[in-house]
Amino acid sequence: MTDLQGSCAPRFDAAREALQRNIDSGEDLGASLVLDVDGERVVDLWGGFRDEARTVPWDEHTITNVWSTTKTVTSLAALVLVDRGELDVHAPVARYWPEFAAGGKEDVLVRHLLAHTSGVSGLEQPAAVEDLYDWDAVTARYAEQAPWWEPGSASGYHATNFGHLVGELVRRITGRTLKRFVADEIAGPLGADFGIGASEADGDRIAPVVPPPPPAGLPEPGSVAARTFSGPAMDAAYANTAGWRRADLGGLNGHGNARSVARILSVVARGGEVDGVRLLRPQTIDLIFDEQARGVDLVLGIPLRWGIGFALPEPSTCRGSPTSGSASGAAGAAP
Amino acid sequence: MIIMDLGRRMTLSYMMNRMAPGIIGSERSAAYVRAIYDAVA
Image 1 (cartoon, one colour):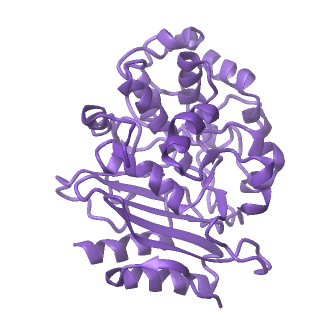
Image 2 (cartoon, one colour):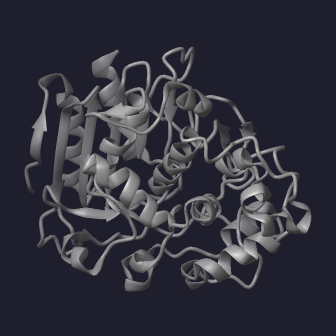
């Protein structure tokens, strides 16, 4: 048993109690939970343990691998370039990355990458997790591939390669790696304790991930889902290795906590500017709500709705949040 | 999990180290989202 640390406005006691219950029961090992309302952190809680032996507490500065939440920061990076007029979401990917036109992909658009509709949702075989660490080699392979379905016609979650595809656009335009761009242009200016990958100096702050039980069923052999989930097959234990932490995996290996991730993405919720740091103009934020795909995702097999860079409210993506009549415009995001 | 609710200028974030089955959220994240929205509704 351990009490949560941090602060919580009384009206959110039910959320605090739910987190406390899950930590007490062991459902959650260590965790952080933040609610930012227009710059005020009305919930800012953390607790539990970093390790399965329950010897090292999860503290205020603990960070962990945040998996697909990383994709939302990668999308923000792309939108920053859109906002500066350096990237056009309606342009062909090949305008910025000529090699990507190979394999019949000359008409794949930037917005297709940002909405998981490009047809390149994984790596052709042979594929190993370590292949994702070699940026130049793996992006060259994605550029060569033929799409696995008609680009733009449906979404198929770009589970492991979203960061490479979007990140290569960032690299071609800015000359900087995605992780460098995020550090220089997003996390740094906002003072957010977040990075793509993690440095060795951060090693003793990281809560290792505890992998989930294996999935119940396997997708139909040969399907887009099967090809994606085997291109490469992901074992969550990789996240606890040095090679993973060194890599630039903009779809998978962001390291941070609830506070730093909320700080970064509050830019979207708060009209593009946080504490004098403006990353997006309102018209750039409007692009997020330009629906690109709606239907059963070819990889995840559940109904999803994608805007440009982010998932839009659907019962399956924003479980527990209001999704009907969303004039409020919730940009749910983090598959 | 990260949710941005532009209408409420609200950002909700949950980061943890014990992964649940599935790729999109979990019972845990759903419970926290529900509790938060019950309080702001």
